Length: 229
Image (tube, one colour):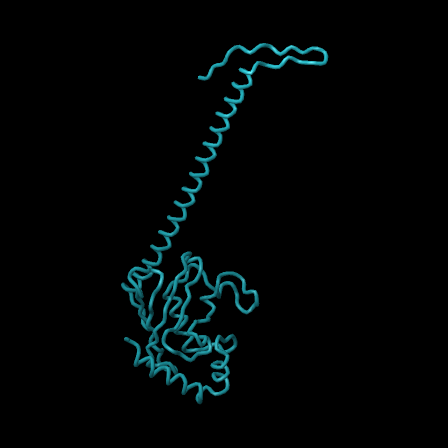
């Protein structure tokens, strides 16, 4: 406990007042400083706990999302789905997968073995993964860089252009299996009305069994040659 000497009373007289002793002034300032320091210390602790709490929550979210990705991969390995296979590109990176897609029968892509990469965002499954064909492929819904453009892989919510309904776009309930089923369906039945590759879409509509078929056949042959490189 901090003590100070007795403080003389302050007497008020007409036109002037008698000030308190210097001891009183020192005592007040000293106690005020200590209270201020304590307040700063408490605020500092609160801020630190807030940061720690925020980091902890973020860490838990990352762990949960990582477990979801691991679970998806285990499910596919345990129960393979006809038409494609999937695995990690690098064992140290759970968020980048390689998939091999078998060209669906009775389509122009039959016999092809197309390699693609799936890249999951850190906030998966709230947002969709990105899919990119590594093997060359000629298709209206795959741009010339290999990026796949289908509704299920579009960001969730309303389509600002009004072409897609929210339920047609990405939803957290979707899995790798539902993505790949959609991609295989895309190969069997291209959507020429909303193309990522305008030239391929034009050929699909106007010369499906001519130039379009020849380009797809070349991609199929090339995919067979490079599938297991």
